[in-house]
Length: 297
Image (tube, rainbow, N blue to C red; front, side, top):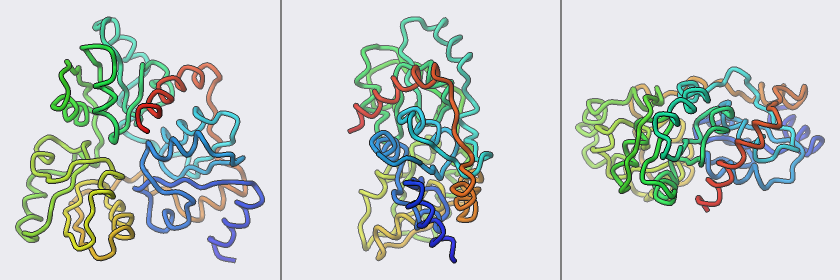
């Protein structure tokens, strides 16, 4: 029996659904019930009536699914698949920042731990960060934990944005030099970049957007330099099979590559690893996540 057949059998037996982020390996994307970005998958997780959610991604994504659907069993196939950026912001640090800026609202990127979310006023994703910040009723916003996304938002809103010193190592490693080299070798290609990239890279981009924003911006006969995690190209290629894509050097997120078909089978067979959070964290973290979903629709 193939991994695909075994996964299909286990899904039926357990009434399970598999959600996969756009940065997952191609073979994982291909067996998932839904592939998408953090916002879209969060909405699906909050609305599904499945008894088990297998979240193929990194830790904060599976935690968000549990927070939004606490009665459902949420599994992450690889316990060690942790987002480095999420670890750059702690709940204690947010509380200290609030003391320094008591009038500010805390807007937190969804790429953060459950404990940090519990200290936020509202969450956002790269897809809705600008409208979320515009919508909050405050002139001063503490934006955590991604400094690059926060700086991008700051250019599009009429508010004081207090930036956090956090970043995605994968997007941070992509440089303007890398982009310029690809442009020289592919002069007709448009640059599409994720707003987690540095401002220098974003200044070179014709298209700036979340992973789903990239999908909607495609033309089937286009050519693109893709400044985000390399396996986003698999999703883009399936959406626009006639287009051509070029990946940027260093565009690999190691934690996103930990999930395999074998680990998904093991996860379903042994019901590991279960996401377990305290009732207090779930209650408090659900508020900013629900606000994010309401603003993101």
